[in-house]
Amino acid sequence: MASNVQGPRAVPWLIVLGVLVGALSFRAPVIAVSPVLRDIERDLGIGSATAGLLTSAPVLAFALLTPFAALLIRRAGSDLALMITLAGVLLGTVVRAGPGYGWMLAGMIIIGVSITIGNVVVPVIIRREVPKERVSFIMALYVATMNGGSLLVTLATAPLATVLGWSGALLLWASMTLLGVGLWGMHVARGRRAGTLNVPSSPASQARTRVQDLATGAITVPTGTPGSRAILRQPVIWLLAFAFGAQALLYYALSTWLPTLTSDLLGIGLSGASALAALYQGAAIVGAFVVPAFAKVAGRYGAPIVICLSWLILAGGLLYAPQHIWLWLTLGAVGHAGGFVVVFAGVVQVARSDAEATTGSAVIQGIGYGISAAGAPLLGALHEETGGWQAPLTVVLVIAVAYCVMLLGASVAAGRIRR
Image 1: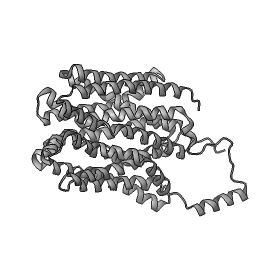
Image 2: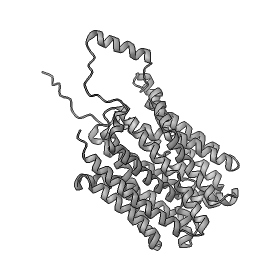
Image 3: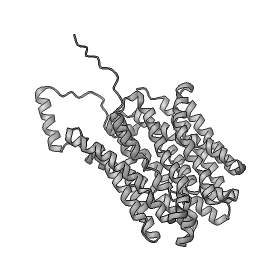
Image 4: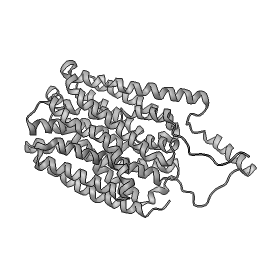
């Protein structure tokens, strides 16, 4: 007699690989301007606060357009939505290479709009395709891949700029996005041929299906089944949103100014400073796996405590002992990588449907990135006003403390949820 018991669902590694290659372009195009920010200021005749807008404009797009991204995903389906993301990043990278600050800012906004869609859709794809017990690991791979792309551009942009100019160096990174377009395009084409592409059916088709199911008795409506907005009644979602906002503010503000800050504090050239700043991206690749693994051993609160300590060590070290910056950046990377995994793995675990996952992810990113958009211009303006980095780094430390309070509060709230 054949058994009706199904074994554990396998991870669809080809789809996961497509997502990971696409994720190379989810941070790198924004971070790429940081190693050459001083050259951009000089050549375009702009101040530090204005230069900071180049990285904060995409982040602001993350915040403002996340609800529209969620709507597009529901209309187009998650597979096509990721393809739209990659095509948009490619277009923005080309536009950014145009002459003058206006073209550069426009390109960064296009990049930001496109990545907004990807930020929301990837947790949905992971939830749909990956067995629940492997979600944290795949999310860690996703975060590690994003940091891998950031590491690559942080290390290589300044040296490439000495040969190609900073505009040419930034344009060269379009090749990374082209690889993602090619690989995910193969998945979309295969899905179309097999009829497995994730494209929502029309309202009329959905209505006909419901009528047929009712007529045959095939449809059942479980009591208490939540709508997409039910997840918003969970306090943990709001705590995660504000914690994520503080973390994203710290990450993008520091990533924007680290090469310049390191060059100023240590008196070294931008290439050397960019190599040191790359520690922040490179160590995060390891941190994305270390924190979830530690959480399995240390319990619910172990990972948040390690993440908080990591951020506090980074902020305090930069402020009070910048000569050991390599150590603070290495330890601090654990916080930003592990925090991202904890936040979005939490959303995936709490959500009871794709609609809830989309809504929860959209709310957290909309609020979080809205907060974080102020980071780079704020630090740039403080540096420009005071002529040093003491005041900006003091603000970083204060925000790190606030972040810890919110993340630990979210952990307590999550502990009250039983699935």
